[in-house]
Length: 137
Image (tube, rainbow, N blue to C red; front, side):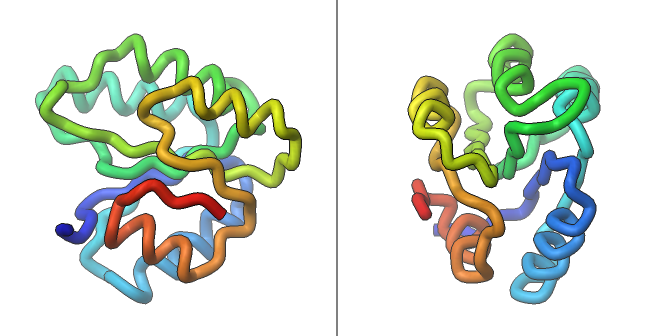
């Protein structure tokens, strides 16, 4: 499979964002990354991208516990913006939650390819970014 060109991290944890970006850049500096600290910022940006006929990120790492618009609210809004059908966006929930209800809830969304417990290790990040397959931790 091809290497991922674009990845988006939506998370309000500055340390997690920093470490994830550093790890991804270390193994593949050509991957373009965008980050948002809440779901609302991401949705607003994605709507603008769609209106401008720009390509959405191939992969989204999404935290579920964030201020303003949490991960679940982001997912509901993301489904409403109807990304172009030829563009496949893979979403991975990344959370410190151990609640089985959160894992089950993530399975209701077709775009969610996995529920991963934070912190993500380097191997998991590399597999997500290079293979873009369903990954479970």
